[in-house]
Length: 357
Image (cartoon, rainbow, N blue to C red; front, side):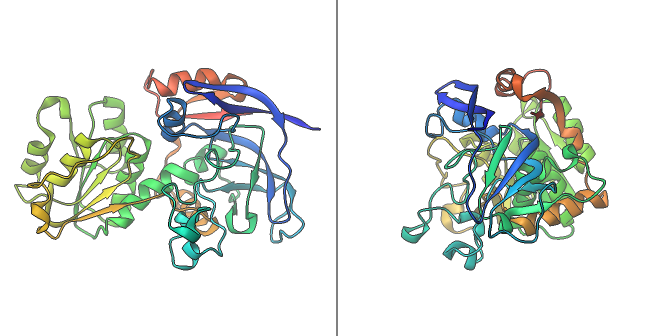
């Protein structure tokens, strides 16, 4: 039996590198040899025991690699081809997919949508922090990497770019809108870039870390609010001359930022929530205008599938946005435990790490 190295969830606060069998594939699957992957904030939720997965599961959901083997029923691709697959891997034929919500293509959808939707890699099946990964429904999920684009240029497409952009898309941003993004981690930074591409003229980033503030300006933020220098709600209302913002994007997943995002909305504005929450949320009566303010609260799970990946890689190839600078650290797969220690504690200005087997 051929073996490979993989980052495996063992128990709370323990993700370790182990030897596992190379995954077998079925007729509709593909086996991808991973060339680059990364660690996501969701993986840290798993590490800390805030999100449950089965012990022994390989973690990770952001694959860039080369097709090693194709299932017998897969057509349109060839072995040796460079590809990515989205963090969300819809089948293309489920009820969720056919009603236009493919990100929610989870195993329980026949009896109601599952909270984690179509998130399978590193959640329900073995993920891609390994030498190889099995991609289910390969024809719906593999997307060829255009010639001339490096692994690191497309590394953000499977998850954080798709998620951050979707936060802007789902908010319905129009040309000339004012937008605020709460928390300038990798997803928040991608939301800033997405808001700029959607035509927002005022983009306010909220964070206290200078390297993230600088990156937000580089990606299109017109103003920065440092919450350590005063009430962020007051600062944002002053920047909008008391009007409030058309859209607020919450990219952290805690009560304080969710509530602040709600408080800075204009009447009829949209709160686009991207954060992964680990406890119940409270909606204040006044901030929600007692339910009479025509405000919207929208949630988003990272859109996946090959067409979404193609579009995002075309954006990268066009030069409209450059997310490669988000990769601040690089590790070999052999050193992934050290990479987790760095990323989980947010040391040394880390934003994203590139992991290469």
